Image (cartoon, rainbow, N blue to C red; front, side, top):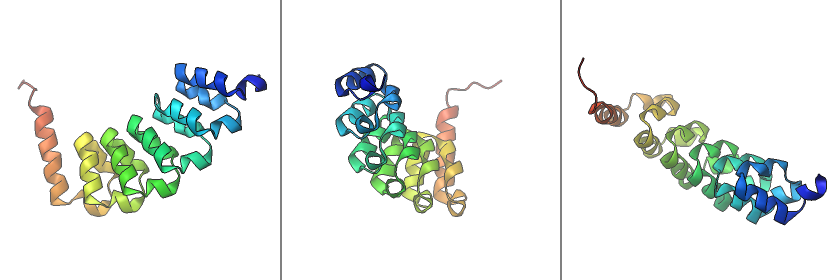
Length: 153
C-alpha cells in the first residue's frame, strides 16, 4: 500500500523489525536520514536501499560499514576511496577490500588491516602488493595462528 510505504512511523516500525524492509519504503523515506540510520543500526546492507544522496553521506556510510563491512559496495565511489571509511569497512570484514577504490587496494596499511580480519582478503589487494614481504609475513602469521589448534594426523 503506497500510503503505508510513505508513512514514516510505519516504515520506522518495520525497519526496527527487519532492516531490509527499507527496500519497500517510498522514495522520500529512503531519503530520510533517521529512517536509514535506524535500518543501518541493524543491518549494514540496508544501505543498498538508501537514496543515493545518503549513500554518499560519510556518516551514514560509516554506520553501514561498521555494521557490515561489505556494505561498502553500496557506498558512493567517493567514499569507497575514503581511507577512513575503507579502514572501518575492512576492520569489520576483510573482504570489503574488494569494493575499495583501486588506490586503497594498493595501500599496504589498508590491505594489512583487511588481512588481520581475514587473511584471504589478500586476494583483493593490488597485484603490486600481493608479493610484498610484509603481506607475506602477515599471511604466514595468520596461517600459523589458525593452525595452532589443529592436530597432526
